Amino acid sequence: MGIVVALAAFAAADFYLNSLGRGLNFDPRSVEPVSTEQPSTPVVIPSAFKVGETVQGFKVMSQVMASQVFDKVDLGSVKNIRVVKTQMEKIVAPVPVATEATPVAIEEKTPEAPVAAVPSSEPLTFYEIVGPRDQGALTYLAIKLQFVAQINATTETINEDSKYGDNSFFYNDQNLQSSAFLLSQIGDNLYGFQYNKKSPETYESIKGMIQQLTQKP
Figure: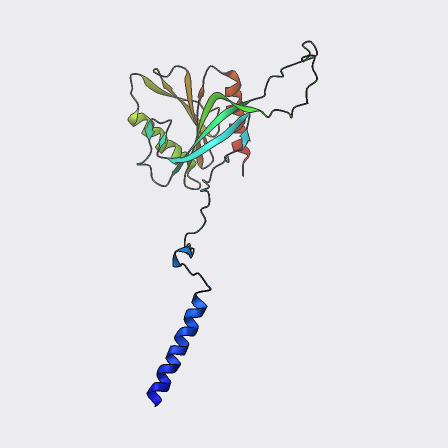
C-alpha cells in the first residue's frame, strides 16, 4: 500500500512541474553568456607632448615606442633608455572665402560655424630618448657614438652644435637634401627633430619647442 501511495505522489509532482514548464518557454540558447573580459583602455605613452596637443603650431597626431632615431640609427644596444617616436603636423588656419573686397553671393545664406584650423601636409617627426636620471651627458655620448658607428662616412656626417639645449648636433644625409635632423640633450633626456629644412617657420617652431622643453620641471 505504501508503494502505491509513493508512486501516486511522484506522478502528481511530475504533472505539476511539467505544467509550470509549459508556461515558461525556456530556451537555453537565449541565455546571454557572462563576459569575463575587462573593458579595454587606450595605452598612454609617457612623453613630453600628448596626442591631440598643439605645440608651437604643430599638432601631435600619434605616438609609438621605437628602437631607432630618425629611422636610421638603431639604439637597441644602448641600455636603460626608452625611445618614443611622435608624428606631428603643422596647423594651418583656413583662408576666408570672402572679404569686404569680395562680397559673398547676392542670395541670402545661413551663416556657417567657424572652421577650425586643420593639419597641413608638412610633417614633423619628434623623437624623445628618455635616459637614466642625472646621466644626460653620458646618454648623449652613448647616442652620438651609435651615430658614428652606424652612419655612412661618405654621404653622412654629424656636426656638433652647442646652441640647442645642453648638447646638440646636426645629422646630415646627402641623400635627403630637403630634410634636417637635429638631436638635442636637455637634462636627462635627448630630443630629436626631423623636419623640412627649407621651411624657416618650422625651424622657428623647433627652437620654440626646445625652449619649452628646457623650461619643463
